[in-house]
Picture 1 (cartoon, rainbow, N blue to C red):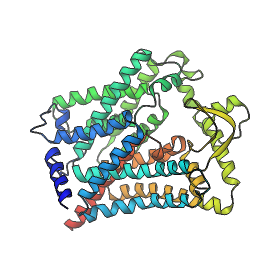
Picture 2 (cartoon, rainbow, N blue to C red):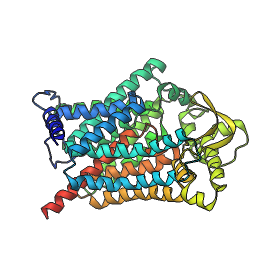
Picture 3 (tube, one colour):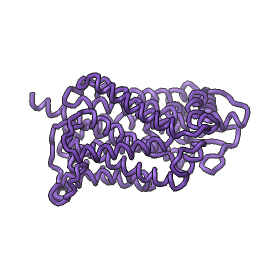
Length: 454
């Protein structure tokens, strides 16, 4: 008790975690983005910088090290709030489906490689930790502006780093073969796309009065737009489009949000079309990749080696279903266990290494279906649909945009699960997982506060 009391005192004094304001998430008073960087007088900025560093770290720190760091912070945060039963119990309740999925997958894991089985468990557990970490962060900060400013700042910094590195490697113009760019630059960061959405919603809310804040947000918008375009990522476009589409259903806005959305998409597409070279529709080009999206995912037994490499996700899914269908009824319901591998009947080179069988897949639904069966897959899907239902049910005019952003991100994860494991991805969706936890915590706090007021 004394140790926890000491930690609580240090936490509050060092970060000034006291605010429990109910102001709009997208209002125009953001000190750290308005040029107020006096950390001694404005401890709010320390909270922003702290969260910003956490959001930046996952792109530059080894995944295992970042997971351990976040886990330690999560343990301290939970112990710091252990007496707030009304807040910690819901976290355990919403984490339970994933723990059940882990247990189901463990039933038939005894015959599989121990290392591969533990790695699979870690992939599932990682989402729970990041979601819980986001939940715990909100329990500490309880300030919506901290979330907004942190993501905008982190997204802008990520964009600057990405754009500078891109220009150093390829120059200012867009490359013809985007696969080459992705190999050199990596897959980018979803923090950039989230920052774009938050800037859009802040500007669109028309509540900004500070001239310096307006200038700062527009500069951040330009930087994040450049980073977004240079990533050449279909997944990033998916998250942006889903976010903008869902946000148009806000009751707090009229036609002006539709107009702003149209202007944003038009400007991004115009910049992309203007900058793309003539080879953009050739093999490896950006539009060619969009055109191949459906064929890449088509489940089929490709015979030709070039077809297998060109449509790898579809071939991979075919081999997964082949192994799954060969199992018994018992295996189909409870899965073949964590660590189960899939023979490829060919040699594939992934990240410079050759494989004749794989244990990790692109399609997250088939990943869970094979290893945790119909039971595991059903729990996985029901969990995310329950999150959407909760966000829709608990949102109201004061927190409507919070609920809609959460719905958009969860829908994005459900779609991304088809192509890159979604929330179970080793690294790329970390910021989305953390943000969903924070938004869920916001809505939970509002629910508890409203119930106490009644």
